[in-house]
Amino acid sequence: MEHEWVIDALRLVIGIVILGYASVKDMRERKVPNAPWIVLAVTALILLPAQVVADGESLSYLLIMVPILAIFADVYWDGKEGSAVARYGPAAKYSIGIIALVALGYTWGTNSYFQHLLAVPVMMLLIVAMYLTDLIRGGADAKALLSLAVLFPIYPVLGGFPLFQGGTPAVQLLFPFVFVILIYASIANSLLFIYFLLRNVASGDLKLPQALLGFKLDHSKITGRHVWLMERIEDGEHVVYVRPRHEENLEKEVDLLVASGHARLWVTPMTPLVLLMWASLIFSSIFGNLIFWLVSL
Image 1 (cartoon, rainbow, N blue to C red):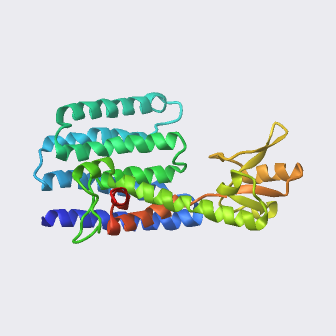
Image 2 (image 1 turned 90 degrees about the vertical axis):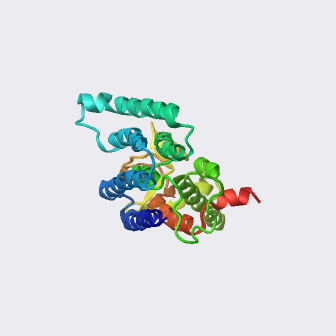
Image 3 (image 1 turned 120 degrees about the vertical axis):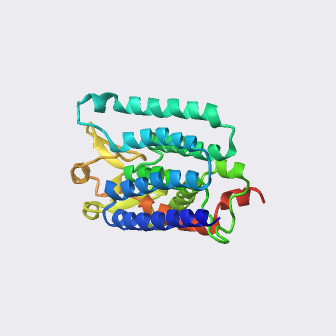
């Protein structure tokens, strides 16, 4: 139907443009402000109800906005430090979201159309869990994925694209479009392991697992670069590790290491995952769910 083509086109154009802009910021600064994600989230929150209305489905289904808004509220509304909102807000928001999710699932969970709407907040909760457990390191990366989960409750279809349209509705439910984007970005990111290994073989730095996650740099070349350290001085001891700190005073840590006699240091680059997600969005829009296609061969 025509409205489906228009809504899908809007989703793709807006998603590609905003992620493209954010990718430039991520490449230059390894930091993306909230503004692009707020615009993307607001757009998604408008297009989701528009999709339900255009499809002629029950307006009651718009109650799916309750858990979605509860999750977004925690992401973008912290409250003043030390206030009741800051202390108890996150628990209250997620409680509302999860209770609403369970109630909606119980009420309409057997309806095939509503199942795709229900998958949106479920995927959002999964993204939050991945962020809290450090599987997704950057706040901007998590915010991008949360907005994309709402923006694409179903696979976008424009003419003959994507070339592989994700199999049955059940498969699309198990592999939401945003999940496919994340998988493609993760696969692209994992190719860096090969680059790191080859670089370290050439330089003779083969300490594992560091050699798969980064490389050594002279201390004079580190400050000002978009990298995390994989070693530091802790309680007077030299420690090598593989999970970099989220926050660190790079210059101070480097000075401590140099003072302790360590001139070449293990670092891991801050990978611009937003850029990989932007490329994955375009790739997914053209080729679709190749994961399902490969598994079904």
